[in-house]
Amino acid sequence: MTGIAAALATIGRAYGAQTGIDLSPQQPGRIRTGKNEQAIAAIANRYRFVREGLFTVAISPHGPPTATYATDARTVVGSDADYAQLIADALGLKLDIVPITWADWPLGLTSGKYDAVISNVGVTEQRKEKFDFTTYRQGLHGFYVRTASPIRHIAEPKDIAGLRVITGSGTIQEKIILEWNRQNIAKGLKPVELQYFDDDAASRVALLSGRADLEFNPNAPLAYDAARSGAIRQVGTVNAGWPARADVAIATRKGSGLVDGLTLATNGVIADGTYARALARWGIQAEALNRSESNPPGLPKF
Image (cartoon, rainbow, N blue to C red; front, side, top):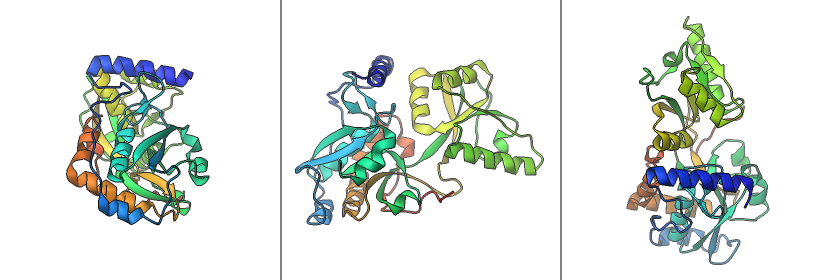
């Protein structure tokens, strides 16, 4: 048991006790679906799976609700694991999840260690040069405040004028805030005060103590924490590709022959309702897509 796995398992036990959400390794409530013959046919004779009869998927258990370790500190659970199970079912395969560190996924995928990566990977134009993508979830960043905050809604640049905003340094969300701030200053509105923290605990203390007004970071973990603690609440979301769109996708090797079948499989589980149920199980149904796409436009190169 690694230190990270043990820590996430501890979080999982606490969260399960508070909310009733199952973080056991057995996952008896995991949503399942049937075979999608059209998706299977789209892959047949075009791709050879890493291990026969298995859909081998890399997932980084970086934190709930998208991916974390179960209470046994070994089994990967979360919305990404549930989605991977649905795709494996649709392809008529057993699911084999390979835990990885997020930074290792490009090399591992390129070298053929696994068939796909399902781990909160956003579509970007630079990544599309080496990988194929099947979208499966909106890439949302969320605005969150302490529950007692007078702030009710954040939807456009003027709404953050003069606020003290927590975000991640060097991130996509920081770029969005900086651009909103630039627009506000150009209109004579008050600038934002950006705040950066090395760890989530310190940033949460700043928000709850009133030293910061707002946190703007990836939506899923903040939504999870809001449901777990009740101490924060969402007041708005923005797509990660703002002002364009950049969704989260399965990554596969470029030209491998998998992408179209995975997109068909995803649209199949969207149509039969199992996809929505799987997201709702982790409280992130707001991030659902109406339709999956193969290699859509992604975040442009900087």
